[in-house]
Image 1 (spheres, rainbow, N blue to C red):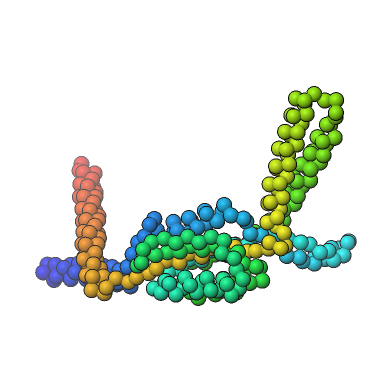
Image 2 (image 1 turned 135 degrees about the horizontal axis):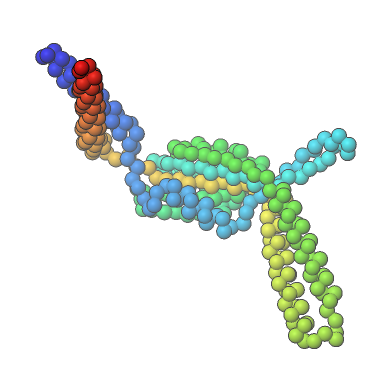
Length: 288
């Protein structure tokens, strides 16, 4: 009995030690105590992207020769939107932020929005660049080398159908405008002329809006979009970090160990109760 008790105590102590050491190692290795700011780094990236949504959209064009069985080779022009999103942290925040802007200048990228947050020690900046399609890959690769990269995504979406839909809408509105102008006659009443001119001006406004949207697709405005978010990272002193990890590991290990012990005790209790019930049921069934 003493041997079983000793084995049980040693097993329980080993389990607690494993829980404590695993939690402590996790906290020490993963917690480079990055001081929080604002609503968090994810909110920073979302704020930058939300603001950029009010700016001009960046679209690019590419021409590809496609072989057609009947008509032969055909030159096909594609309109597309290409967007990269990168987020990084840096212990040398000023240097990396300046390097990002210097990289943009060297590759003729346009800074379309810039959002800076926080005080020294917990600063962050979100930048949106317009980059030519030829420089896109090199620009993204250059940003990847700044700071400590946390995430990167690149999305390319075909916009040819949207471009053609805008063209068709503008053509339809122009025909409608010309048709309304043809209805104007010198003998019409003033009220009818005013109503007709109002309708024509309304259509003219919509045509101008479509012209602005179509202007984003012009080859002269051919850009890809790069969102870059950089956050300052400052490690806390080693002593307080280890002390905090020890305390948190002890607290977590105790709660986890008690939870496991209660679960094991409940399982054993239910097993014992089930065994007693089964034994009694068997004994009752054997009575004459």
